[in-house]
Image (cartoon, rainbow, N blue to C red; front, side, top):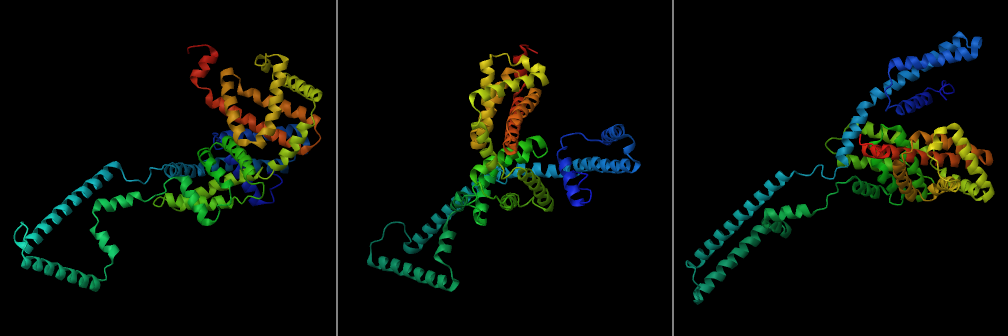
Length: 449
């Protein structure tokens, strides 16, 4: 595809960036690029001989230099973006980020208590002053003159308060607010619901933008943490995107506008990181979603057609045909990977059961991806205890796809079977790799070292 895109610079640049993005987790250096380039050129010279002209060699030399240099450039240039993404996501996904510390909260609480105490003392002194002014004595006074004097005093105060309130334009609400203690005002502020999590803020922004009818957005939000944290791991990122495509398909079989998530996601991050957000964050997060969207669009919209063709294929296999297919699978697998025989020592009945379950799983993954993801993870953890080498999955998948491909004439069904079985193998391989701790390895080897 590089050669066919030489007359289209923008497309060639996108292809090279995608390739460089897939090598982020590899240490690509200039000497290694030179070794790879020279090996390709030597292969062309050996295979083509005189047909490999000087102009062709010069062209291939320039193309390979460009691709190799671009891979190194992408790894160096995007290192800063990856750091920005990592730091900002750690803050945005932390519900406690932005909250005042415990010491500040306690200090504020003590100040509120002191203010309440001061206000209480002032109120008591004021009341005492009024009593002394009214009667001059704290003992009750029952004379008619004293009662008239008291009522006259309160009436004058009420008229003065009404006049001052009218002239000042003060409202009842403002008077009540001013009479509240600092502790009451602080309590009201604390009772306000402040959205601090990414999911809650995303739901709010999606509702404001009118995206509430897009149920698939929830699936992306649930997977978004895995997408962000594995942005520098192309293999894992592709796996997460493939699973996400299946989940999106179950929510909405029609057209999906991925730009909706991008708009709500950027608005959410701006809200959660108001002080840190700048043009660097804007560029980094746009770049992140552009890469994720590119991976999603590879297979988005196809699972609906794939599952129909694959289900038709599996329903057409009767018992005799299935027995023959399963036998051929193991024959091809043992020829390509003889070491696999050490791990398949069960009876023929058990081996046929395993192969039959594998073929059923390829259909079930399309039909119920949520359940199958959990089941495959559990199956992978069981394989950790079995001590199955992960390098056997590749030959087994190849043998199975070849046998099914020789039986089926529908290219869509074959592609669906290959894609589904490959995804299952990647999930099993990752689960086994992550679950193979030092303790498990020692148990499988029956050794204390």
